[in-house]
Length: 318
Ligand SMILES: [Fe+2]
Ligand SMILES: [Fe+2]
Image 1: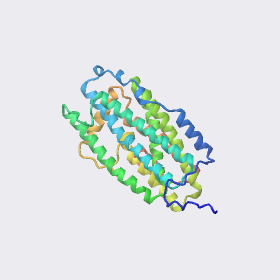
Image 2: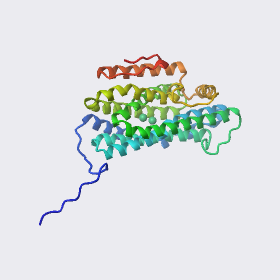
Image 3: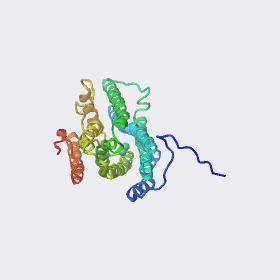
Image 4: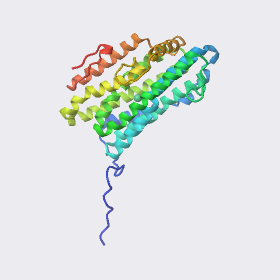
């Protein structure tokens, strides 16, 4: 009797899946992700002694972590969206699995933001009552940052129907490169062990994410069309502009911010720095970002891929 075969599975679909992948570099990165697991809840957040800081310093530090959360919280969802896309489009095994590890990493980074905020200003994003003008400005700024985060999210979801995955991912490269550099420098400057601990682990994760975004791009290079190559500067600049809010200063491009936002932002970052959070000065951020981005530019140049103009940090494209 003939064996009846199942019908074809309608596509796109998570099935059929494929366990076999020859990409040793991605397998090593995936193994690294597993062995570098860490737990934000085991950082001793209670060692942040509230009596060591005045009210304004606590607000300013909670503000910085809440602004960072704009990027960490949505990153977990961004990579989840990417994982569904990769699975349904049958990308290689380790590409899918590495993306899955980044979801967990970004959840951990967001958890650090949440734990720091809740220790310094309990219920900062839900019911915390501003006591003065500075508090009210901090909370209002955070709401504006999240409003823009919501606009970014819509664009991100739409990008999957506009570009192939490597192009979608190119805009992450800037963020990963600069986040690993910034967190590393902040870890050195931060005074409290809980902050040093969190920033150190986050640096390690971001450097792994950066290696992954390079691998995705390198794997895609042979199949990139001239039209897709021409889009790379736009995608990179997109990442630069979005991450500028936390890694540098937001340019007028994309960011919709009210009058007074930047004055309050600079003041709060300054207070958080003085309280020992390790926030870099604008000049330090410019230098850190410039040196990291020059590395990205050099590497893209080796593959003859174009680079955007970033006049904000005195870097110009090809
Ligand atoms: Fe992150
Ligand atoms: Fe990341």
